[in-house]
Length: 100
Image 1 (cartoon, one colour):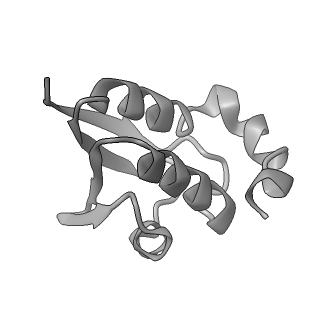
Image 2 (tube, one colour):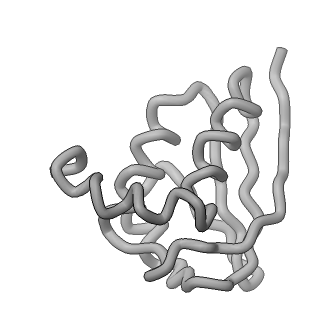
């Protein structure tokens, strides 16, 4: 069954959206069966494209909306949404080797 899920979030990543965390978000989006978008300041960006994510300019404390449409929409949003939470901010420091 295809689901469409939308979630309002606040970016709690200490340094905001960087190349490293954007690459991980795009990787999750690209391995899912869902179409994932991020809406910020009235613009909609594909979460599947690294440059699109970087062009958002999302900083710590910025509100945004993330949406997924597909069979695994719920799991995909849960995975990506978790990456924006403060409690996993230490996670980013350990991901550089994973992305490169």
